[in-house]
Amino acid sequence: MNSRFLACLATCLFMLIAAASAEDAPPDALIAVSWNETVLRVAEAEDGFLTLKGLRTAAMLHVAMHDALSAINGRYEQYAYRGSNPEADAMAAAAQAAFVVAAHQYPDKVNAFTELREQQVASNSMNARQQSGFELGTAAATAILEERGGDGWNAAAEYDWHPMAPGVYAEFNEHSGTPEGFIFGAGWARAKGFALASPDQFRSPPPPAIQSDEYTQAYNEVKSVGRFQSMRRTPDQAHLALWWKDFVENSHNRLARDLVDREGLNLAAANRLFALVNMSIFDAYVSSFDNKFFYNHWRPYTAIRWAANDGNPDTAPEESWTNLHRHTYAFPSYPSAHGTASAAAMSAFAHVFGDDYEFTMRIPVVDIAGPFSGKIQMQPATRSFSRFSDAARECALSRVYLGIHFRYDSTEGFVLGQKVGQNALARLPVKKPTTSKSDSD
Image 1: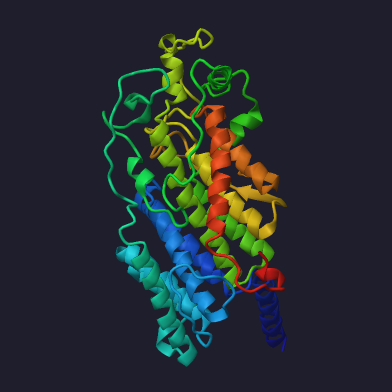
Image 2: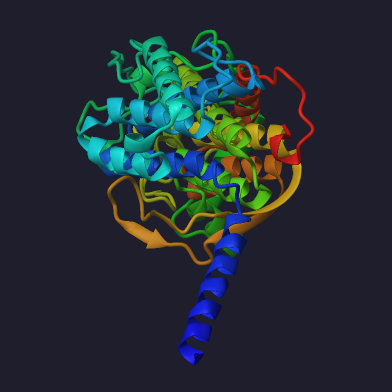
């Protein structure tokens, strides 16, 4: 009798715990969350986010899901697929759309993707609505894959090296850990954005002249607070410099997953957030790299070590200077791509939740120095903010304390990112007003 009672009690407790867990996020939203996390994990394992492939895949995947869901509920404008099928099953459509895109981009992982899809919708026991959803998901995925075909995400581009001159980007392969003559990201400047009319749609103003007061102030600031051992950099500045090193597509998608869970967004709203975040980050990289190679501005590492030749009497050189990051990226400095990408993504969060929003963000692990240098655990692993725009500003300025950007690089990155983010928002507008909190924009 006691054993039966205990078994019954255990069953009831399990059901209560399961019900409580389900309240964290609507079950259907977990489809978007799980595909987001899975495809980015695959991308990181393949190339460490050193190409646009993973970010592009995440953006296409969520756009395909968005178009399929919008074909059912008619809530938002569609991006690539324009059909309508209000009778289709939403969960089946979303899962299949994600599967088709992911399997197309990472065919060697098709078994893992199949297993994930089967956990969400069992294909061997589908009803008519689910079968219709599968067909819809396939159509939506096919549309975005065709639309993005030949978008130049991995195209090579020639780079003309220039003789050493004040303000001009110069090679420093000993600090970037790259082969002589290597340049990173020149092709990114020519890729097709998701919402950009062209890579140069948002042309940044030129960086300050080397003789100007603005340059002098920025030079002396990064030389002081960005050096490897700095007496002026506070412990909090050191923490935020290292903490923000995580790739934006990794850290900001993690934040999106956390906020979907916190706010209990439904599938359509959660997936639209993921689509906006990843479209914005992709376009931010395209726009910032277009500006980088247009202005070809030098990095602090070169500027400080070569300052004796810059013609500015107020920029004292230091030939052995190195930065907190212990690495300098092998592409021009202005504007900050990291700052641009974060500001663009944070614009999507502000659009959905409002800019005045208290949240805590998690970045548990970052690179020790540059890519493939090993990992370190961040202590603490979280930082808290009252506004999304505050977080974006801090992210941009973190690169100054890390010693890899001038302040004007970071400031313009933030401004450019907001423009790119707002531009991306216009590509997935609401078609019909909603009243549900979980559908709010």
